[in-house]
Length: 597
Image (cartoon, rainbow, N blue to C red):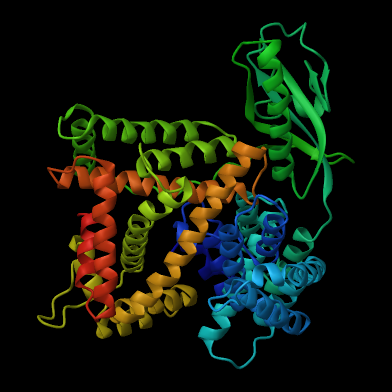
């Protein structure tokens, strides 16, 4: 987990410390995929269910998948236990169980369709009217007037409500970058102040900012590469093109005149300045797509930076458009770089990899780079998903594309997720200078030198769990999450239960990304929280490519991506079966296969 060392300088209670740490981790640029804010919350999962059930062409399997995820979300969201929501949520949950639950009534989807639609519309209207207010009311009580419950229950409630709040704000149009800036400027301000820090005042300011009404903004983007500036239209649709900027904008960063440059400007309504820039950037690019097609075939480009101000007046600022949040970047040693280069070289020039398999892997790398180079979220998602298709589907597949990708990727991504968790908690121990002693010889354990299987064994030992708990006392959220994970490591059956829960969420999410891809390709639609979907998808594609290259270097006879996925599926299934028998050895071996030291 990520830690902000500045928190030690603020007078937080343990509950408040948990809240700001959750916000920090869920919006941080380099958080693990599993620590980032979730795409779905109670309101938008039910909105998605309503949307899909309204499609005549929607498959029953897709509706059931969304319905089962909705059941899970309604079961765990802490805000739904508040008085305003408790009774309606119970009714909604029971009805969803009848239609989509594990013991759903036969024919219930058709027989109860009208009843479900009626209750969905009523419940969604209730959430739309009060969800945000109840989240803030619940957080206010938990952070400023905590009850006598134990810390784990309190902390999990705070984490649930903070996560739901962030997910709601993203769905409403906020960007992850903007939410992280709220952390740096409001919750844990970077700039020093002469006034004493009072959390209640900061929390109230946060509430006022995120609940403020949608505002009208004006923005300017530089457009470069125009062949004939003088002949370019002054106005296309709602977008105007000007050669000179207003005086208050002309002196700002990157807002200078250049040959073959115009400025595109327009007004748009959005929740904040960054969201306004992103929306206007998309509008400008849609207009320029038409220009490139018929009028100007040159390489016209729109800058990533923009100047913006409220339409009613105020200060102008220059900001970058929100982009996909970068995923964690591991420090690569010279030896690791040499090994990576060797694996790539063998892939490109070796004879043992089939030509079809080599083409698929190289196509996936090319599609990854194509998606990374574009600023358009739809293009990123389509390219990165197609990269996964190239790896998982290949030629001659008989199952659905979405199902093939899900089946092939899930074992690999589950193993990578556990490996990433163990590696992240190793970093916590190193960052906090927590020394673990071998109970056998009394010598300090060299944590950096342990492979994942050895580290798994060390962290599963009860004596180390007690030591770590005591040393993380000042980091309450990390203390709780680390202790929970060590509990899974210590109990193979608990680890199997944990894996089953995570795997179900991963499969739902892969199918959601597949539906988003289909919306973009077939109906020009746009899925909710597409920036977050792209961040997750990038992590998946990079994880699979990295694991595939490592396997190619480790197994001298590996001949195709299909062979890699078959082996991973077998290893993961064997690991789960062994966990059910109380043996974690197969899981440790699987982790070493995916991420050898």
